[in-house]
Structures are given as structure tokens and as C-alpha cells.
Image 1 (cartoon, rainbow, N blue to C red):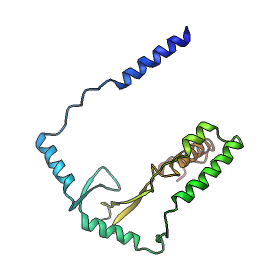
Image 2 (image 1 turned 45 degrees about the horizontal axis):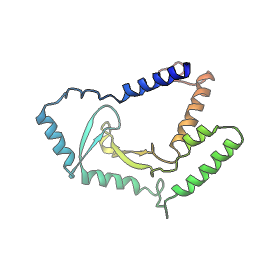
Image 3 (image 1 turned 135 degrees about the vertical axis):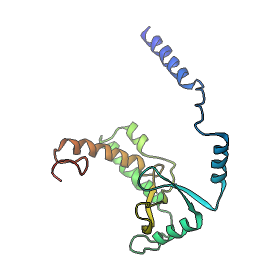
Length: 178
């Protein structure tokens, strides 16, 4: 009887999540929406967030590309790869995770969650430094769908548990001792 009740309750919960929610009321006028749509379609400009603060930057696309290539031209930081290493990393990660699962360090569910069978190459982008306009772009890499993303999240969670208990971690520069 309890099993039937639980099944019914979970079905009710599923139905609630799939109900159509009313669209929120727009906080901009139709004319403003039209202007935003026009800006988004304009390939001569690039719309970005600033590296700090909540600012939105509209930048000439040619300038953005020039500043991005300026970052890549630093041979001490970047070099051209002969081929995409994703499949090699995927194989190595799979082998390591298989070993961890066989040793009992992670369970099958964690293995399936961490090991992605399809992934994207991390994407580079630059954010304008509005507090230092002469400094160019702040380099960023979006890796949320890359092969190592879930592994990095797991490691970060484990480390955060260790750091929070050691008594030596500071939350920010305003903490005592700095």
C-alpha cells in the first residue's frame, strides 16, 4: 500500500513540474525589445559583460577580435596544438575513473555522472576590463560542457569540505589576519 501511495505522490509531483507556467510580464517596451533584437543581429558589434561589475559592453567586433588575437599572440602563454587532445583526455579520464570505481573510491552512479561520453571543447572568450581600459581583455575559458568539468566539480566539493574544517582558510581579504 505504501508503495502505491509513493508512486501516486511522485506522479503528482511530476505533473506539477510539467504544468505550463504563465509567462512573466515583460519589463521592457515593445520598442526596446525591437532595439535589443536589432543589436543582437548586428554582426559589426559584440555584446559582452564586463570582467567586473554588472556592466554590459557593446564593442566593435573588429576591435574585439583584434584584442583577442593579441592575447593569443603571447607565445609564453599560448601555443598552437597539432590536434584536438579531447579524445586522448577522454580515454585517460575514463581509465582513471574505471580504476577509482574498481577500487571502491567512487560508485557506479558517480562514475556515470563524472564520465561524459559526449563533450565540447572548452571555449575561449575575453571580457573587457572596464576598470583598466588600456589593459585589453580578461581571458576566460568556458568549460561547463568539457570532459573535465564534472570531475573538477567533484574535486572542488571534496576540497571545500577539507578547507572549511582546517581553521586556516579565509573567506576573503577582510577576514582577520590579513
